[in-house]
Amino acid sequence: MKHPAPDADRARALALVPVSPEAEARLAIYVDLLARWRNVTNLISAASFAEVWTRHIADSAQLVALAPDAKRWVDLGSGAGFPGMVIAILLADVAGARVHCIDSDRRKCAFLREVAGATGAPAEIHAERVEAIAPENLLPVDAVVARAFAPLPRLVELAKVWIMHGAVGVFPRGRSAETQLEALPAAPDLTIDILASKLDPEAAILRARSRLKVRS
Image 1 (tube, one colour):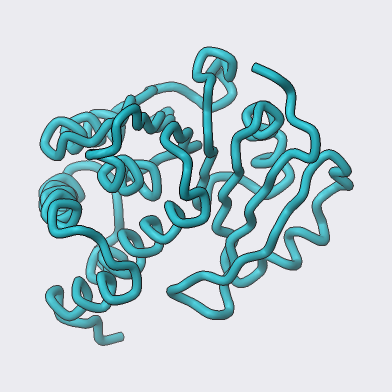
Image 2 (cartoon, one colour; image 1 turned 90 degrees about the vertical axis):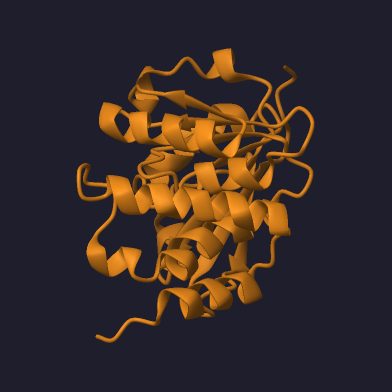
């Protein structure tokens, strides 16, 4: 498969999900660091990196608009930083912003810390399993996000504590989102919307909210 030239990939991504010049410059630093680190640490495949701006940067950046008032995010299973680090970079100039990136791989966390330092992104890196995090220690949280982290039932189970405290759950689930949602056990305390992805009209993003939030 022939991949687009890097400049074309970047231009397409920014056309789909426009960002400020300052954010674009920070994202470029991120991509440059990813290029250096990916041969040392298993961050991203060569094929995936060839379209990193559209497949990862824009795909992550579009999530910010789905929780437009959110300043404090939690990213479950951050990996190479998609979407948590991208979100943190986009919120770099927002007062009070904080993105908690959680991943059990310490090498990936070392990479994320370098990116945060180089870009000024308000990211806090947690080198732990998601299950080992005490959710109440991260409160208050405005949005919780995860991309290719766990099956939907498990993901909702892990994220629910923050959602019940008022956070919005933002979960890209690809082309099988509706099927996954149908297989989710009944959750009468949640409202889940199906939203279209800007990058793939056949892919969807699930947005979950609590019907009755617990007070912090």
